Amino acid sequence: AEAALSDEKARLQGLERERAGKGGGLTLRDPEAVHLDIERASRRIELLEGRVRRFGELGPHCAEMPRQIFGAASDGDTEYVRFLLDARMAPDAQDSRGLTALMHAAINNKVSVAKILLERRADIGLQDRNGATSLHYAIQFNHVVLLKEMYDAAKGEDHLTVKDRRGKTAIDYARRPDRHDAMHFLTHRVG
Image 1 (cartoon, rainbow, N blue to C red):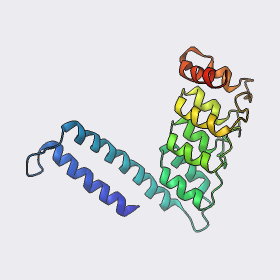
Image 2: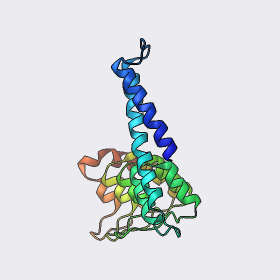
Image 3: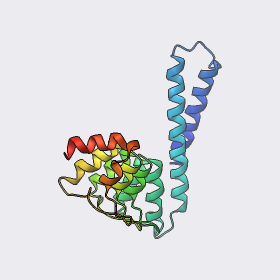
């Protein structure tokens, strides 16, 4: 991970030189394309720095793995989530608030991470301390693409009517006017 981080930083420096016109020649690329490449490289550097930090925190018995999957899920670090799951990390581990990696992905709209967790059979119906499920979070944050992924993965299981500690279901939260997209999806899928 450290070598990849070093390579990506060198790549970013080259892109920044290209943008500034200091590459030693004429640039033939569209400035917008260069800008997008710089944004992608910056995002990749953020992920790699997080990954290097997480690797550094791993002890000899890997007791830190549950905490690490939550950070990786929140950051959208699909490679590190896959690494932890391949190392037999339970996809349904819960943090001190009862949040799972899938809930962290739902809150932060990390669709790629959610797909990996769902492929590894993460439980959509698990509830946190407040009784909320990952569907509650996807709807509360109006993350419709993520909602669709979870709904499709549920394969007919009814997680939409699970009540949280306030007595509200995910459908109840979708009824708010600012969550029109989520309600539209549910209306067309569920009826």
